[in-house]
Amino acid sequence: MVSYFVRYRGQAADRLAFARYYENEHARILRGFSGIRSLILHQPMGWNDPFPVQPDGTELLAQMTFDSAADLDAALKSDARREARADFARFPAFTGEVTHQAMTAKVIF
Image (cartoon, rainbow, N blue to C red):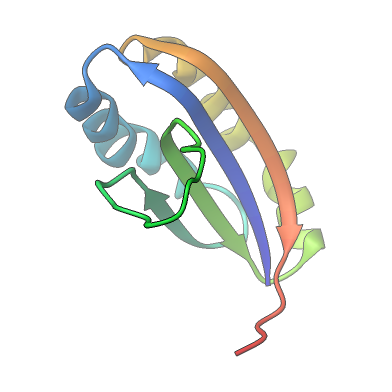
């Protein structure tokens, strides 16, 4: 399995509006990616760790999964990808950085 992660690290002016837009509007475009198997949206939650840790500050982490690197490459070259990039201008206000990372996965247990 290959995953393509898009991380929105920072702060949305309206967290709920940002998450809703991504799930209800942007996801429709991502569904058009050739070979995409799934879209998983990760959102922050309250948690308590008894040890000192540094919170990441991620507003939203989108994980798209593909069967192979070739499938991911095809998706990244698709018209749907160009449309998704253009759609970012229509997102609700967000201040921060957006990073992209492709990764392979290995299940250990």
